[in-house]
Length: 441
Image 1 (cartoon, one colour):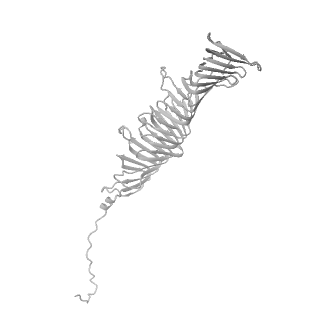
Image 2 (spheres, helix red, strand yellow; image 1 turned 30 degrees about the horizontal axis):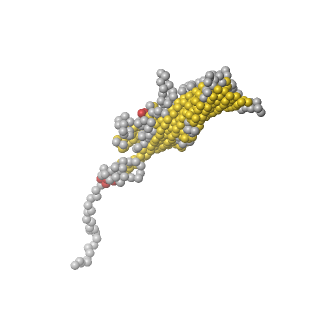
Image 3 (cartoon, rainbow, N blue to C red; image 1 turned 60 degrees about the vertical axis):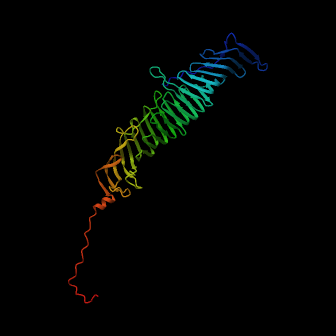
């Protein structure tokens, strides 16, 4: 819901007890202080004089000496902002604070939110004391938030569990201690969290983890995670400091990860920060200053790496057996994947890979003889290099401008290309040499 203007702070409550026909009242005066102790049973009805605030209970105790009121049994508190039920309420009038205990159920009327807890404190907004109301729920409370759509239907709720939940104003909550946030599309955990309904924003701190729900789940980790979304659907998730995102298609690591989500699936991912970014697909590793991944429907279609970009992959071990990895580098790398042709259960295969700006590439070629240990080696440099792939292997290489390179053919190819030496001819006798006079037996 959009943020609304908070009601003006009210004046202090002067509690009157009109009560009912069955109400029984006993008043005792302290002879030393001349103050009264009042005990009420048989049903209690209390009103704040001149204000729309009502409190109902089975019985009550009132101590004039310290302006303290205790209500016991089936307590119901009603005002403009909150409707709160509990078994026991202590009203500290000097502080304008109400302490609700045992089976507390609070409803925030303007925000369609509910708060259940063993104990809850409510600090009323009163002129001269505080400008906004405040609630503090302890002993593992549960916050349930429901938003309606334009037709009045309820969206799936957001449920927050924590050791302590503090509400500030009418739309901001802070959850502390073993926080768990459950939504229809994601589950988020962390040590603490901030929820701002007015800005449709939430932040998790200290080891937060966000896991999506659905057929193609993704997991996001970082030291701080921020979530944005309208209508209770997350459409953007940002992880700050040591961030990692894992999905079936790709794993991304960076100082900052900015994920865009559509229909509960990753649609795009931005990775950047002083420490650079790394993306790992089933086929290769890519490192650069920043990485932009386009993946509609969580199917990777294009990956752009900018700034000292470097990609490496293992050759097909069924054809090449080597400790060396194939690689390509440049100021910018663009990898395009065949995400349309791939079946739902397979990983999209790479179609082509571009390197631009002082580009170079090293890749290995299987030998025709089948000897996996003696592949061919190709090393090229140029302004732009394009590798095209077929069935996951390099099919063609195109180099543009400032071209240079070295090609070492596979062992069997080199052997076939080596020229055949002719048979040795007998030595030609030296006719100028004088004949020998020695005789042989």
